[in-house]
Length: 413
Image (tube, rainbow, N blue to C red; front, side, top):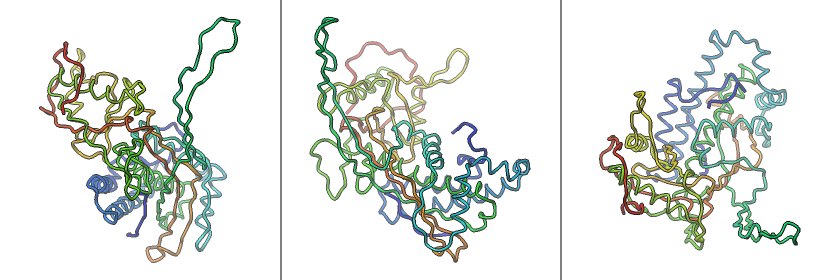
């Protein structure tokens, strides 16, 4: 099954018992192709190569999903539920919608997915992809405005019965967000239509969620801003030179070695100190809110540097200054992208629409569905995130010697 796609480029409560878990061996083919797509993004491959890798990833997800759904339908666990019980997991509006998209014929006008499905897609994205939650992805309306303020003199002290003196002297910056449209193509095998609306919903939601999640995570981290969000690794300072819609990458602020506890403390203190001042010079609290985003293998090496064994024999990672570590396949290896939570605007906006083209893949015995959503991403200012090189002195060693004294923390340049 091969077709072109364009891309802008949980544990959840018991809401739906048929949700597929993509981190299992049943989805190993998808995991392999997703890693290949991430490599293409990290290596700045050309657009055609990235689209081909993304298409292969979604093909693998489609194949794995059909296989898993078929297995669930035929399993003893699935037989314990009647058709009525299965359908009760989705609303009447959803049953009507997913029945309609398989019974209508010809090229259709876009249809808005039920709000319950839109909410489920968003929740799945954030819960199954923790990086999106750390970045702070929010679900907004169709008309998106980004409002930023820098409040000063919020209160004025005076006598209890004196004149009202308090005045909010704040500068509000209201801008229309330049949203980017994300398009995901979902191929629905005709055979799956026989399983009913509940299973069709599961398949469609899984496909849309993973397509948007992969694209959004990639763009929020390393997006160049050209018809896509502006990533954390991009310069966004006032009057930055933007060429052809592309924002320049941040230069490295230094090198993190974590050679020993004293060095590690100084390096991380310097990193957080850099994030503790806004672009306009005003201070901001970064301690306890800073996230270190790394490639999966690099994150393990870093955590090993800070891993100790407690009295109970358990291994624990003790990061200083309330730091949080996270990993993403879209972070280049050997790099650390540090950012302050709440200092990056990440929004999913607009109604989620889907349009069918049932003749496009007729030879493959599949129906093609096009899902569209809008995204916006940009740091609040250039000091919201910083990029470092990672060059561990001795990967995997522990750093349990006590840290004492030392100069003001600065990363090794």
